[in-house]
Amino acid sequence: MFMLFKSPIMSSNIEVCKNKFTLVDSQIVKDDDIDMFSFFHECSEESDKSFHAVIGYIEEIIMDTTFVEILTSFMEKYWKHFDSDEENKLIYSDIFYSYQETIEKYIEKKLMEKIDNFSMKNFEEELIERRTELDGEIFEILATFSDFLEFKEMFLDYKRMKEGSSIDFSEDLLVKKCAPDTVQ
Amino acid sequence: MGFLTVLKKMKQKEKEMRILMLGLDNAGKTTILKRFNGEKIDTISPTLGFNIKTLEHRGYTLNIWDVGGQKSIRSYWRNYFECTDGLIWVVDSADRHRLEDCRVELHQLLQEERLSGATLLVFANKLDLPGALSAEELRDV
Image (cartoon, rainbow over all chains, first blue to last red; front, side, top):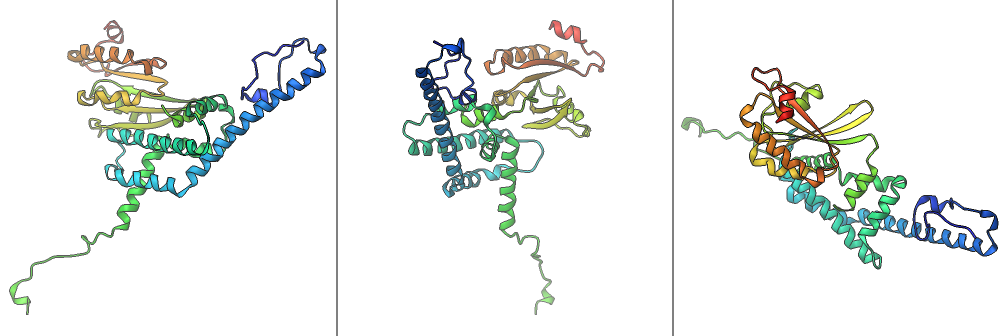
């Protein structure tokens, strides 16, 4: 018989997907054992599938208008705290944590609606296991949610937009007291 | 810590580090940061919030976080511990009156679990001032 190191069952390690098992005494592998190979292979494909399904759902969730609305209402609530000074106020950090929490909670809630028994904890473990595979636009977008400087810039953009959209007449109007003899 | 933080950690480049710079007020944290970054240092006022600078050095990207050191805002320091790779503790070597204060604050930080993986550098600043303690004397404190 043969032995497998690093028990690949249900593991989602990329090495396993490629079927790179370490075999000891592989000469006496029988036909039955070949079936075991394909069984392991299916398992890892299965976990691959479910991981990619979650990523696909996350993509859908953040592209959805409801998500944009949530971000907008968040910015609407806090934009007045921000200004373009180089030094950051301590409150930015509190707002930043609450921002990440809002996004995480929302995505988690939506995933739980879409997937039975969805567990964020398992998903986090998957992310750690697949750290070398996390390339692509979706991961870039998700990473910006936890980048403080991107977050500040987003608020400053929003602030500029808010302040630009309400026209300020105060500098165009001149209020002057007229001397009595000029009013006739 | 949510999944976004997990993801960020996984995506962090190998040669990228987060450095947290702390110390009592008036130690010179912001001045050090700006000087490193090649900026003017003649108009620096006490930091009430925090500054962030990204520096490239020997192929490493350093994200340096400098948080104000006034007593009233030291309780906010803990908001910045997460994901810190290195801690720079800045000491005003000429401020003998507050050395004890300085020691106590640093020891409190060293108890922090979230900083336990970070490397510590004690930066003895203002050594050129008259009456400043030498680096050796500071070490003994």
